[in-house]
Image (cartoon, rainbow, N blue to C red; front, top):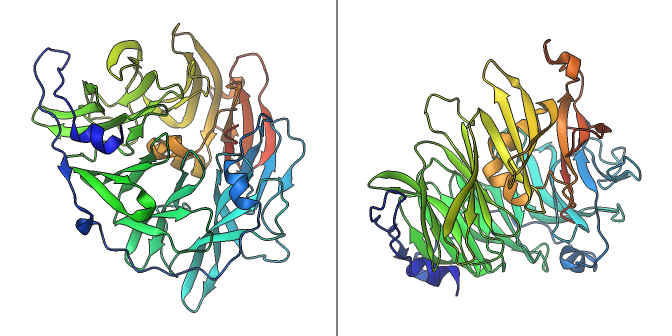
Length: 460
């Protein structure tokens, strides 16, 4: 059953207090109401190397297990977790000294990396593009996927795009810059250089792909939009009353089930939308949530009091989800000021970043076993500016960018790692930040890979 059919047949569910809750109002939207494509620059003709399409989707048994990072000089490298075999995958800076490369995203296969390229202004303004590069550095020149309209701004700070591949690697969703503002577009990665399909315009825009790559669910301002076959621009469902108290919807990695927040008569509530499922919990203020990779658990960050600074939460709950897609039990709960939570690929633990309100510059990273509740402190770190941006908007980045090793043994963090004897002193924040590999235990020493502002682990 598709998500469209599931949403259309959403059942009325009971809250924890036993009262019957009204189902969110879902409105079918005919194709004729699909937003018109925003006018945008068509990239110059570009022929993709013959290996690009297969590199996006190839998934053999050999692990990639590499880290991609951006240097202080805005070059992009991939490297083994032990620091060996570092390879620059962007062009030699002596050839294009003014080009900057930022915000890398691994393809699902781990064979290629999507990067935002920022070039110096010409008479039309700054030029920004999405480009693809081979993760082993074998491409002489990155392949242009899309070029933003000149002089358009990114989504914030030094982040020009939000990007997420479909699980099969065939499609790319990206929030890009056009002369009409930010637009969510979908691109066919088997036809690089062709104009993508524009779905919706305006900010904020957050989204997630279904496990089978057939559906894109979008939280756009106050609506939850469902696109079946999004490359064709088919807006098939529109659920109003999606409040701004959450960012990205969370689609189950194993079944047609969507976690999203709705404004209902009793206030904002987190629901699982599917053939079963239903009410999960109320969300009195801000909320972020994400699925374990096996689809059996949902991690939920909530603000239970609205006096917290924006971007901080004070409760983590891990909720078990039954095989039928119904909320079954609250496995564990922690209460403290927190920034983000990241599932380990093995679904057995989460990485939690928390802070002390008296000095929020330093983030404490802990690994929590979700079954036993055991907590392992792994690092105190002052985040780089870009990694701090990831923490602020982790509701989107957790969907697309990995900081966990594929085998769940370590994390990659960027910033200024604080030594234990510095915990009572002012944090050391001088010079460029570093890329750190931090083991998920409290025994193995952290390892630096060198200077860098942002880094992500390959998906396998």
